[in-house]
Image 1 (cartoon, rainbow, N blue to C red):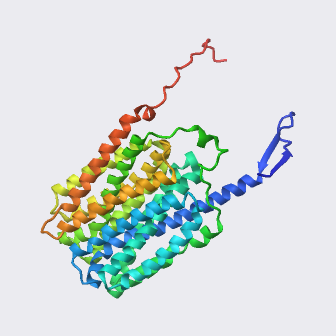
Image 2: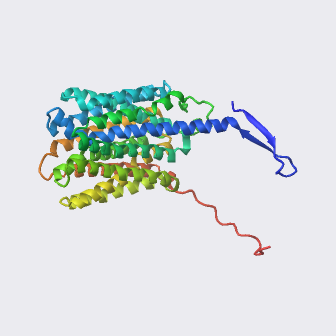
Image 3: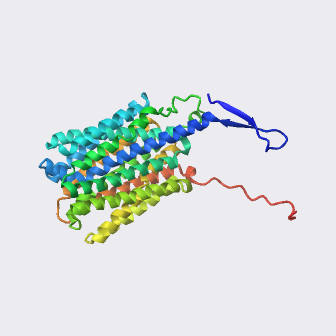
Length: 431
Protein backbone atom coordinates (compact mmCIF):
# COMPACT_ATOMS: atom_id res chain seq x y z
CA UNK A 1 0.00 0.00 0.00
CA UNK A 2 1.38 3.40 -0.98
CA UNK A 3 1.65 6.04 1.72
CA UNK A 4 -0.12 9.28 0.76
CA UNK A 5 0.73 12.67 2.19
CA UNK A 6 -1.65 15.61 1.75
CA UNK A 7 -1.12 19.34 2.01
CA UNK A 8 -3.03 22.51 1.23
CA UNK A 9 -1.66 24.74 -1.52
CA UNK A 10 -2.32 28.45 -0.93
CA UNK A 11 -1.66 29.15 -4.62
CA UNK A 12 -4.89 27.41 -5.65
CA UNK A 13 -8.30 29.06 -5.77
CA UNK A 14 -10.58 29.50 -2.80
CA UNK A 15 -11.97 26.00 -3.06
CA UNK A 16 -8.87 24.84 -1.14
CA UNK A 17 -7.96 21.93 -3.42
CA UNK A 18 -5.95 19.10 -1.93
CA UNK A 19 -2.94 17.72 -3.75
CA UNK A 20 -1.87 14.11 -3.22
CA UNK A 21 1.83 13.41 -3.19
CA UNK A 22 2.82 9.77 -3.35
CA UNK A 23 6.16 9.18 -1.71
CA UNK A 24 5.76 5.47 -2.35
CA UNK A 25 5.03 6.17 -6.01
CA UNK A 26 8.29 8.07 -6.43
CA UNK A 27 10.22 5.28 -4.73
CA UNK A 28 8.53 2.73 -6.99
CA UNK A 29 9.47 4.71 -10.11
CA UNK A 30 13.07 4.99 -8.89
CA UNK A 31 13.21 1.22 -8.40
CA UNK A 32 11.81 0.67 -11.91
CA UNK A 33 14.53 2.91 -13.34
CA UNK A 34 17.29 1.05 -11.47
CA UNK A 35 15.87 -2.31 -12.54
CA UNK A 36 15.57 -1.14 -16.16
CA UNK A 37 19.19 0.04 -16.05
CA UNK A 38 20.22 -3.36 -14.65
CA UNK A 39 18.50 -5.11 -17.54
CA UNK A 40 20.30 -2.79 -19.95
CA UNK A 41 23.64 -3.80 -18.37
CA UNK A 42 22.72 -7.48 -18.67
CA UNK A 43 21.94 -7.04 -22.35
CA UNK A 44 25.28 -5.31 -22.89
CA UNK A 45 26.80 -8.49 -21.44
CA UNK A 46 24.68 -10.61 -23.78
CA UNK A 47 25.83 -8.48 -26.72
CA UNK A 48 29.47 -8.90 -25.71
CA UNK A 49 29.07 -12.68 -25.83
CA UNK A 50 27.25 -12.71 -29.17
CA UNK A 51 29.61 -10.19 -30.76
CA UNK A 52 32.70 -12.11 -29.66
CA UNK A 53 31.90 -15.42 -31.38
CA UNK A 54 32.13 -14.35 -35.06
CA UNK A 55 35.63 -12.79 -34.93
CA UNK A 56 36.86 -15.69 -32.79
CA UNK A 57 35.98 -18.47 -35.25
CA UNK A 58 39.43 -18.57 -36.94
CA UNK A 59 41.13 -18.54 -33.52
CA UNK A 60 38.90 -21.35 -32.26
CA UNK A 61 39.73 -23.35 -35.39
CA UNK A 62 43.46 -22.76 -34.85
CA UNK A 63 43.30 -23.64 -31.13
CA UNK A 64 41.53 -26.93 -31.85
CA UNK A 65 43.35 -27.65 -35.18
CA UNK A 66 39.97 -27.77 -36.96
CA UNK A 67 38.80 -26.71 -40.43
CA UNK A 68 36.13 -24.04 -40.91
CA UNK A 69 33.76 -26.80 -42.02
CA UNK A 70 34.31 -28.61 -38.71
CA UNK A 71 34.22 -25.48 -36.56
CA UNK A 72 30.80 -24.58 -38.02
CA UNK A 73 29.40 -27.28 -35.72
CA UNK A 74 29.75 -24.66 -32.97
CA UNK A 75 26.74 -22.85 -34.41
CA UNK A 76 24.66 -26.02 -34.40
CA UNK A 77 25.40 -26.82 -30.75
CA UNK A 78 25.08 -23.19 -29.70
CA UNK A 79 21.58 -23.27 -31.18
CA UNK A 80 20.84 -26.57 -29.41
CA UNK A 81 21.85 -24.78 -26.22
CA UNK A 82 19.58 -21.86 -27.11
CA UNK A 83 16.68 -24.25 -27.69
CA UNK A 84 17.27 -26.07 -24.40
CA UNK A 85 17.69 -22.78 -22.54
CA UNK A 86 14.53 -21.34 -24.10
CA UNK A 87 12.45 -24.33 -22.99
CA UNK A 88 14.01 -24.15 -19.55
CA UNK A 89 13.50 -20.39 -19.28
CA UNK A 90 9.82 -20.66 -20.22
CA UNK A 91 9.41 -23.06 -17.29
CA UNK A 92 11.59 -21.24 -14.74
CA UNK A 93 10.41 -17.66 -15.24
CA UNK A 94 6.83 -18.78 -14.54
CA UNK A 95 7.87 -20.15 -11.14
CA UNK A 96 11.01 -18.39 -9.87
CA UNK A 97 11.64 -14.64 -9.51
CA UNK A 98 13.37 -13.58 -12.71
CA UNK A 99 16.20 -11.59 -11.13
CA UNK A 100 17.35 -14.62 -9.15
CA UNK A 101 17.63 -16.62 -12.37
CA UNK A 102 19.56 -13.82 -14.09
CA UNK A 103 22.12 -13.60 -11.28
CA UNK A 104 22.97 -17.30 -11.49
CA UNK A 105 23.02 -17.32 -15.30
CA UNK A 106 25.32 -14.28 -15.58
CA UNK A 107 27.84 -15.79 -13.17
CA UNK A 108 27.89 -19.11 -15.07
CA UNK A 109 28.20 -17.34 -18.42
CA UNK A 110 31.17 -15.30 -17.18
CA UNK A 111 32.94 -18.48 -16.09
CA UNK A 112 32.26 -20.11 -19.47
CA UNK A 113 33.57 -17.13 -21.44
CA UNK A 114 36.74 -17.13 -19.37
CA UNK A 115 37.40 -20.78 -20.29
CA UNK A 116 36.64 -20.62 -24.04
CA UNK A 117 39.99 -19.30 -25.37
CA UNK A 118 42.11 -21.87 -23.53
CA UNK A 119 40.28 -25.00 -24.71
CA UNK A 120 42.18 -27.04 -27.31
CA UNK A 121 39.78 -29.92 -27.89
CA UNK A 122 36.99 -29.33 -30.43
CA UNK A 123 34.33 -31.38 -28.66
CA UNK A 124 35.11 -29.88 -25.29
CA UNK A 125 34.75 -26.48 -26.94
CA UNK A 126 31.45 -27.59 -28.49
CA UNK A 127 30.17 -28.72 -25.09
CA UNK A 128 31.02 -25.39 -23.47
CA UNK A 129 29.44 -23.47 -26.36
CA UNK A 130 26.28 -25.55 -25.82
CA UNK A 131 26.19 -24.54 -22.13
CA UNK A 132 26.81 -20.87 -22.96
CA UNK A 133 23.93 -21.09 -25.45
CA UNK A 134 21.68 -22.14 -22.56
CA UNK A 135 22.84 -19.11 -20.55
CA UNK A 136 22.36 -16.73 -23.48
CA UNK A 137 18.80 -17.81 -24.18
CA UNK A 138 17.93 -17.70 -20.48
CA UNK A 139 18.91 -14.02 -20.43
CA UNK A 140 17.31 -13.32 -23.80
CA UNK A 141 13.96 -14.95 -23.03
CA UNK A 142 13.92 -13.68 -19.47
CA UNK A 143 14.67 -10.02 -20.05
CA UNK A 144 12.43 -9.67 -23.09
CA UNK A 145 9.62 -11.00 -20.90
CA UNK A 146 10.57 -9.14 -17.70
CA UNK A 147 10.80 -5.82 -19.51
CA UNK A 148 7.22 -6.19 -20.73
CA UNK A 149 6.07 -7.20 -17.24
CA UNK A 150 7.86 -4.16 -15.80
CA UNK A 151 6.54 -1.51 -18.21
CA UNK A 152 3.35 -2.99 -19.71
CA UNK A 153 1.88 -1.16 -22.69
CA UNK A 154 4.52 1.60 -22.31
CA UNK A 155 7.32 -0.84 -23.06
CA UNK A 156 8.18 0.21 -26.66
CA UNK A 157 10.99 2.73 -25.97
CA UNK A 158 12.35 0.61 -23.11
CA UNK A 159 12.37 -2.50 -25.32
CA UNK A 160 14.31 -0.61 -27.97
CA UNK A 161 16.65 0.68 -25.27
CA UNK A 162 17.19 -2.89 -24.08
CA UNK A 163 18.16 -4.05 -27.55
CA UNK A 164 20.26 -0.94 -28.10
CA UNK A 165 22.26 -2.16 -25.11
CA UNK A 166 22.74 -5.49 -26.88
CA UNK A 167 24.04 -3.58 -29.90
CA UNK A 168 26.45 -1.63 -27.69
CA UNK A 169 27.90 -4.87 -26.32
CA UNK A 170 28.07 -6.50 -29.75
CA UNK A 171 29.81 -3.44 -31.19
CA UNK A 172 32.40 -3.43 -28.41
CA UNK A 173 33.29 -7.13 -28.50
CA UNK A 174 35.10 -7.19 -31.90
CA UNK A 175 37.04 -4.06 -30.91
CA UNK A 176 38.19 -5.74 -27.71
CA UNK A 177 39.22 -8.82 -29.71
CA UNK A 178 41.04 -6.71 -32.32
CA UNK A 179 43.11 -5.02 -29.59
CA UNK A 180 43.85 -8.39 -27.97
CA UNK A 181 45.05 -9.78 -31.31
CA UNK A 182 47.16 -6.69 -31.92
CA UNK A 183 48.81 -6.79 -28.49
CA UNK A 184 49.17 -10.52 -27.81
CA UNK A 185 48.33 -12.30 -31.12
CA UNK A 186 45.68 -14.33 -29.24
CA UNK A 187 42.08 -13.73 -28.11
CA UNK A 188 42.58 -14.82 -24.48
CA UNK A 189 42.69 -11.38 -22.87
CA UNK A 190 39.63 -10.24 -24.80
CA UNK A 191 37.53 -13.09 -23.43
CA UNK A 192 38.79 -12.57 -19.88
CA UNK A 193 37.90 -8.87 -20.03
CA UNK A 194 34.46 -9.76 -21.38
CA UNK A 195 34.00 -12.27 -18.55
CA UNK A 196 34.63 -9.51 -15.99
CA UNK A 197 32.23 -7.11 -17.74
CA UNK A 198 29.46 -9.74 -17.68
CA UNK A 199 29.49 -9.67 -13.87
CA UNK A 200 28.80 -5.91 -13.55
CA UNK A 201 24.95 -6.13 -13.36
CA UNK A 202 24.98 -8.98 -10.84
CA UNK A 203 25.06 -6.80 -7.63
CA UNK A 204 22.16 -4.66 -8.92
CA UNK A 205 19.97 -7.63 -9.83
CA UNK A 206 20.76 -9.40 -6.57
CA UNK A 207 19.25 -6.55 -4.54
CA UNK A 208 16.20 -5.70 -6.70
CA UNK A 209 12.75 -7.28 -6.56
CA UNK A 210 11.66 -9.02 -9.77
CA UNK A 211 8.72 -7.71 -11.84
CA UNK A 212 5.42 -9.44 -11.14
CA UNK A 213 4.02 -11.90 -13.66
CA UNK A 214 0.75 -10.30 -14.89
CA UNK A 215 -0.79 -13.76 -15.22
CA UNK A 216 -0.66 -13.95 -11.43
CA UNK A 217 -1.83 -10.37 -10.89
CA UNK A 218 -5.54 -11.13 -10.66
CA UNK A 219 -6.24 -7.55 -9.63
CA UNK A 220 -4.87 -6.22 -12.92
CA UNK A 221 -7.75 -4.93 -15.05
CA UNK A 222 -5.56 -4.75 -18.16
CA UNK A 223 -4.40 -8.35 -17.73
CA UNK A 224 -7.95 -9.71 -17.54
CA UNK A 225 -9.63 -7.45 -20.11
CA UNK A 226 -7.37 -8.13 -23.10
CA UNK A 227 -8.22 -11.14 -25.22
CA UNK A 228 -5.55 -13.59 -26.25
CA UNK A 229 -4.33 -13.74 -29.85
CA UNK A 230 -5.36 -16.68 -32.07
CA UNK A 231 -2.89 -19.54 -32.38
CA UNK A 232 -2.47 -18.91 -36.12
CA UNK A 233 -1.47 -15.30 -35.54
CA UNK A 234 1.03 -16.34 -32.88
CA UNK A 235 2.45 -18.91 -35.33
CA UNK A 236 2.98 -16.19 -37.95
CA UNK A 237 4.67 -14.00 -35.36
CA UNK A 238 6.98 -16.87 -34.40
CA UNK A 239 7.84 -17.48 -38.08
CA UNK A 240 8.79 -13.81 -38.43
CA UNK A 241 11.24 -14.19 -35.53
CA UNK A 242 12.56 -17.47 -36.96
CA UNK A 243 13.59 -15.98 -40.28
CA UNK A 244 14.60 -12.49 -39.13
CA UNK A 245 16.80 -13.95 -36.39
CA UNK A 246 18.25 -16.43 -38.88
CA UNK A 247 19.25 -13.55 -41.17
CA UNK A 248 20.74 -11.40 -38.41
CA UNK A 249 22.71 -14.09 -36.58
CA UNK A 250 23.98 -15.78 -39.74
CA UNK A 251 25.38 -12.50 -41.05
CA UNK A 252 26.98 -11.47 -37.75
CA UNK A 253 28.64 -14.86 -37.25
CA UNK A 254 30.08 -15.17 -40.76
CA UNK A 255 30.78 -11.63 -42.02
CA UNK A 256 34.25 -11.75 -40.41
CA UNK A 257 35.16 -14.93 -42.30
CA UNK A 258 33.35 -13.76 -45.46
CA UNK A 259 35.50 -10.61 -45.41
CA UNK A 260 38.68 -12.67 -45.08
CA UNK A 261 37.65 -14.99 -47.92
CA UNK A 262 36.90 -12.02 -50.16
CA UNK A 263 40.51 -10.90 -49.84
CA UNK A 264 39.53 -7.32 -49.04
CA UNK A 265 40.47 -7.42 -45.33
CA UNK A 266 43.06 -9.02 -43.03
CA UNK A 267 42.40 -10.52 -39.59
CA UNK A 268 42.51 -7.15 -37.80
CA UNK A 269 40.48 -5.15 -40.31
CA UNK A 270 37.96 -8.01 -40.53
CA UNK A 271 37.31 -7.43 -36.83
CA UNK A 272 36.76 -3.75 -37.62
CA UNK A 273 34.41 -4.77 -40.44
CA UNK A 274 32.37 -6.72 -37.89
CA UNK A 275 32.41 -3.70 -35.58
CA UNK A 276 31.22 -1.50 -38.46
CA UNK A 277 28.16 -3.74 -38.66
CA UNK A 278 27.59 -3.59 -34.90
CA UNK A 279 28.24 0.17 -34.81
CA UNK A 280 25.50 0.79 -37.35
CA UNK A 281 23.37 -1.77 -35.51
CA UNK A 282 23.83 0.22 -32.31
CA UNK A 283 22.93 3.50 -34.03
CA UNK A 284 19.83 1.89 -35.53
CA UNK A 285 18.66 0.67 -32.16
CA UNK A 286 19.31 4.05 -30.57
CA UNK A 287 17.21 5.76 -33.24
CA UNK A 288 14.60 3.04 -32.78
CA UNK A 289 13.90 4.34 -29.27
CA UNK A 290 12.51 7.55 -30.75
CA UNK A 291 11.02 5.96 -33.87
CA UNK A 292 8.93 3.59 -31.75
CA UNK A 293 7.08 6.66 -30.41
CA UNK A 294 6.28 8.03 -33.89
CA UNK A 295 5.71 5.02 -36.14
CA UNK A 296 3.82 1.77 -35.82
CA UNK A 297 5.65 -1.51 -35.30
CA UNK A 298 4.46 -2.67 -38.69
CA UNK A 299 5.89 0.40 -40.47
CA UNK A 300 9.29 0.06 -38.77
CA UNK A 301 9.57 -3.65 -39.61
CA UNK A 302 8.81 -3.05 -43.29
CA UNK A 303 11.41 -0.28 -43.41
CA UNK A 304 13.93 -2.77 -42.00
CA UNK A 305 13.01 -5.52 -44.44
CA UNK A 306 12.99 -3.40 -47.60
CA UNK A 307 16.29 -1.77 -46.63
CA UNK A 308 17.78 -5.22 -46.06
CA UNK A 309 16.58 -6.48 -49.45
CA UNK A 310 18.14 -3.54 -51.31
CA UNK A 311 21.43 -3.79 -49.39
CA UNK A 312 21.89 -7.50 -50.05
CA UNK A 313 21.03 -7.16 -53.75
CA UNK A 314 23.73 -4.49 -54.09
CA UNK A 315 26.23 -6.80 -52.31
CA UNK A 316 25.47 -9.56 -54.82
CA UNK A 317 25.67 -7.23 -57.81
CA UNK A 318 29.02 -5.69 -56.78
CA UNK A 319 30.66 -8.59 -54.97
CA UNK A 320 34.14 -7.64 -56.26
CA UNK A 321 34.17 -4.21 -54.62
CA UNK A 322 35.79 -3.63 -51.23
CA UNK A 323 33.88 -0.36 -50.84
CA UNK A 324 30.56 -2.10 -51.39
CA UNK A 325 31.50 -4.73 -48.79
CA UNK A 326 32.18 -2.07 -46.15
CA UNK A 327 29.25 0.20 -47.02
CA UNK A 328 26.67 -2.56 -47.33
CA UNK A 329 27.86 -4.36 -44.19
CA UNK A 330 27.35 -1.11 -42.31
CA UNK A 331 23.98 -0.44 -43.98
CA UNK A 332 22.68 -3.92 -43.21
CA UNK A 333 23.61 -3.45 -39.56
CA UNK A 334 21.44 -0.33 -39.51
CA UNK A 335 18.47 -1.95 -41.24
CA UNK A 336 18.29 -5.14 -39.16
CA UNK A 337 18.86 -3.31 -35.87
CA UNK A 338 15.25 -2.70 -34.86
CA UNK A 339 13.70 -5.83 -36.37
CA UNK A 340 13.79 -7.95 -33.22
CA UNK A 341 12.80 -5.38 -30.55
CA UNK A 342 10.06 -4.02 -32.81
CA UNK A 343 8.83 -7.59 -33.24
CA UNK A 344 8.60 -7.85 -29.45
CA UNK A 345 6.67 -4.56 -29.38
CA UNK A 346 4.34 -6.03 -31.99
CA UNK A 347 3.93 -9.13 -29.84
CA UNK A 348 2.86 -6.91 -26.93
CA UNK A 349 0.37 -5.13 -29.19
CA UNK A 350 -1.04 -8.53 -30.18
CA UNK A 351 -1.19 -9.56 -26.50
CA UNK A 352 1.26 -12.38 -27.17
CA UNK A 353 3.91 -11.82 -24.50
CA UNK A 354 4.03 -14.48 -21.81
CA UNK A 355 7.02 -16.46 -20.62
CA UNK A 356 5.71 -19.47 -22.56
CA UNK A 357 5.17 -17.62 -25.85
CA UNK A 358 8.51 -15.81 -25.58
CA UNK A 359 10.09 -19.20 -24.91
CA UNK A 360 8.48 -20.62 -28.06
CA UNK A 361 9.72 -17.63 -30.08
CA UNK A 362 13.30 -18.28 -29.02
CA UNK A 363 13.03 -22.04 -29.47
CA UNK A 364 11.79 -21.62 -33.04
CA UNK A 365 14.29 -18.88 -33.82
CA UNK A 366 17.10 -21.08 -32.52
CA UNK A 367 16.25 -23.72 -35.11
CA UNK A 368 16.82 -21.22 -37.92
CA UNK A 369 19.92 -19.86 -36.17
CA UNK A 370 21.21 -23.42 -36.05
CA UNK A 371 20.50 -24.29 -39.68
CA UNK A 372 21.37 -21.08 -41.56
CA UNK A 373 24.93 -20.58 -40.21
CA UNK A 374 25.63 -24.29 -40.67
CA UNK A 375 24.62 -24.06 -44.35
CA UNK A 376 26.96 -21.10 -44.82
CA UNK A 377 29.78 -23.03 -43.14
CA UNK A 378 29.48 -25.85 -45.69
CA UNK A 379 30.06 -23.59 -48.70
CA UNK A 380 31.99 -20.52 -47.53
CA UNK A 381 35.38 -22.15 -48.23
CA UNK A 382 34.62 -22.23 -51.96
CA UNK A 383 36.23 -19.60 -54.16
CA UNK A 384 34.15 -16.42 -54.63
CA UNK A 385 31.39 -17.90 -52.50
CA UNK A 386 28.40 -15.59 -51.96
CA UNK A 387 26.47 -18.17 -49.93
CA UNK A 388 26.34 -15.86 -46.89
CA UNK A 389 24.53 -13.12 -48.83
CA UNK A 390 22.05 -15.54 -50.44
CA UNK A 391 21.17 -17.27 -47.16
CA UNK A 392 20.60 -13.95 -45.39
CA UNK A 393 18.47 -12.63 -48.27
CA UNK A 394 16.27 -15.75 -48.35
CA UNK A 395 15.71 -15.48 -44.60
CA UNK A 396 14.62 -11.85 -44.88
CA UNK A 397 12.26 -12.66 -47.76
CA UNK A 398 10.58 -15.37 -45.68
CA UNK A 399 10.34 -12.95 -42.72
CA UNK A 400 8.53 -10.55 -45.07
CA UNK A 401 6.07 -13.28 -46.05
CA UNK A 402 5.27 -13.87 -42.37
CA UNK A 403 4.73 -10.13 -41.84
CA UNK A 404 2.32 -10.03 -44.78
CA UNK A 405 0.36 -12.80 -43.11
CA UNK A 406 0.20 -10.86 -39.84
CA UNK A 407 -0.83 -7.68 -41.65
CA UNK A 408 -3.75 -9.24 -43.53
CA UNK A 409 -4.87 -11.19 -40.45
CA UNK A 410 -4.96 -8.10 -38.23
CA UNK A 411 -5.40 -5.43 -40.91
CA UNK A 412 -8.09 -3.41 -39.07
CA UNK A 413 -5.79 -3.13 -36.02
CA UNK A 414 -3.03 -1.53 -38.10
CA UNK A 415 -5.30 1.11 -39.61
CA UNK A 416 -5.71 4.45 -37.90
CA UNK A 417 -8.99 4.98 -36.09
CA UNK A 418 -11.36 7.27 -38.02
CA UNK A 419 -11.18 10.85 -36.84
CA UNK A 420 -14.40 12.77 -36.03
CA UNK A 421 -15.54 15.28 -38.62
CA UNK A 422 -14.70 18.87 -37.87
CA UNK A 423 -17.37 20.57 -35.83
CA UNK A 424 -18.08 24.00 -37.23
CA UNK A 425 -18.98 26.88 -34.88
CA UNK A 426 -22.53 28.16 -35.00
CA UNK A 427 -21.29 31.73 -35.32
CA UNK A 428 -18.42 33.24 -37.25
CA UNK A 429 -17.91 35.77 -34.52
CA UNK A 430 -14.39 35.95 -33.08
CA UNK A 431 -15.55 37.50 -29.81
